[in-house]
Length: 234
Image 1 (cartoon, rainbow, N blue to C red):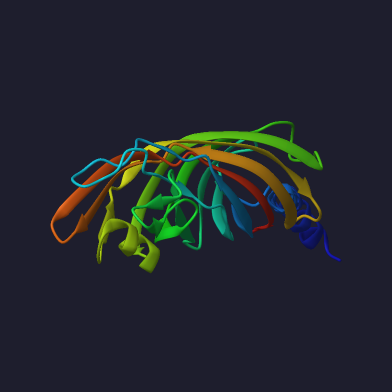
Image 2: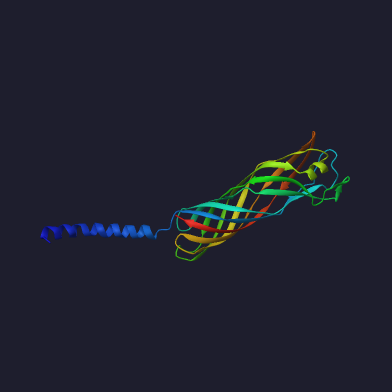
């Protein structure tokens, strides 16, 4: 090796070291994106005013059955502690049951499935993760907003019978606060397991139309969800 070659190599060495350090830092940096897939176990603590309108007996109310659906979420990590989370899932079909008297006239009512609806209900959350990226288990909390739109609302045969004929049902769109608390366990560099509890305020105005007879109420769905999922970072 000539003196000229040695000198050139020595001049390039600092640049090579810097590039190697930069590459190592990039390898060590946490991946900014994460996709999560799992299950939503949703429990509704429904409260509503009694239904009001013409020919409506006193004490007519409703409750919503619990559902389990697929959980799909995208997380964008802003730094080692803060992240934006767009949480959602495959819209479930929620079943609504009569709550109140055993019968309306001669028609069975209490605990009868009176209506069904699908929910599109994403939440946008700002999460804070405790501890450091090197920690295998990291608790987190998040606050944000929820948007819920109801569609494919149908009155069941039991609902039509209780209402006195074929009935159209409508629920207004809801905006409200949302929150989550949970933890993640890092299995590998790319894979982690998440368990969390989330809640949102979902309030809606109910309106039914039975041959021009309008009945209304306001409903607080109060969904509470346990989440179990796997996350993939990239």
